[in-house]
Length: 177
Image 1 (tube, rainbow, N blue to C red):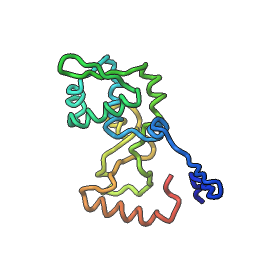
Image 2 (cartoon, rainbow, N blue to C red):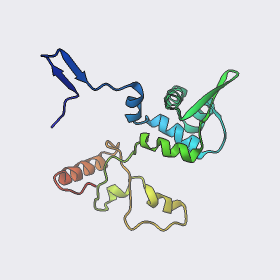
Image 3 (cartoon, helix red, strand yellow):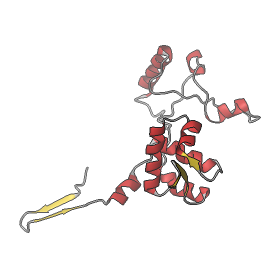
Image 4 (cartoon, rainbow, N blue to C red):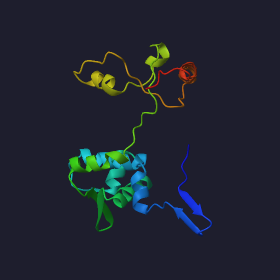
């Protein structure tokens, strides 16, 4: 059941409607992927300020995307821009830990769905993720259950076909978390 955001009282000639200001609407929106990359990079790296050009090189992003991402972060008050000569430097407005707590509601997870499948040749070919990937490059013990990543559409037709079959089989069950 959907509740209307408007009430019309024709006998009084009144229309009541719930209106959102720009601040309320922007607080509800998630950050774009590029803005999240920039914000997380700034949070985890202790250097005070970075130029937009430097961020583009370090993150491997097109300068246009860096400009859009920083503009989005500035509009929310997460970072500040300072002009130094011909370049623009960006830096955090508040302490990293405090900013992460404030910005965490605007961050979105790249994980779409979690599914459990049998370990086959096709699945083993997917990239490792989470603690499973970390165990490969560190002294951390691997988790009991191997974790692999996949895009919704992969370039490998065998893997794509296998994933579509698995999703079709599981769509009626409650295997998804």
